[in-house]
Amino acid sequence: MRLSVSRPLRYGAAAAAVAGLLTVAAPPAGAETVPTAPSTVRITEIGLDYVWVSFVDRATNEDGFDVQRRSPGGGFTDVGGIRDHRTGQPQATGWSYSRQVGWPSSGGYYCYRVRAWNEAGSGNSAEVCPPKADLVVGSGVSLSPNPPPSGQAFTASWTVCNDGGSPSGPFYDTAQLDGDLTSIGQVSSILPGACRARSARFSDGVLGGAHRIDVRLDVFSSVTESSETNNTKVRTWFT
Image (cartoon, rainbow, N blue to C red; front, side, top):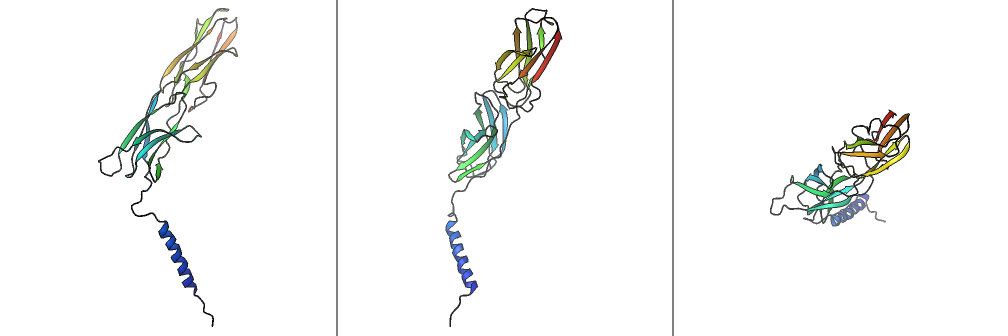
């Protein structure tokens, strides 16, 4: 007579084998785990040379923190670290930290995150992006003398303002007289809420008739702005 093995016995043996594998794969008691990601990341102050990044610790087992940033579409890089300075303090969450991070001399727009790390890995916060810059011609285009006499040199002046929330970084503006490019210049980075006086000298003057000057900001699109529709101002007159 041939003996048969019942299906429950076979399934029971397989289950026991799987359970054994799971038991072997489980981490040993007391093994270090990945720390909880920080929260409440804020960009609290921005200057031409630095930015303050603050956050709240939500872990009890981190060895330190890294502030990271990236340009739009880029990858994150470390720009400043903080060693956990709670030595002698009870294990608890809710501690606030901040870090001053240098602003690149080339300017640009960046988003930030903070990661808490230990030997087991890292927990990354949500990404935070500050308000973008917004360049505008603040007070129109003025002429001196006004209007320019026929055939005499004159100066066109305007003011560039940053109505956004981040430094602009350097950029170029231009002044075109009657459709011809007659002036181009570099403007250094402008802080949020600040303005910069600009001017162009037209030594040859103009002849009688209708004329116009077009002032254009950020002609090479090097500044990431909240609006790209307000970078031009036109002045017309008759000589």
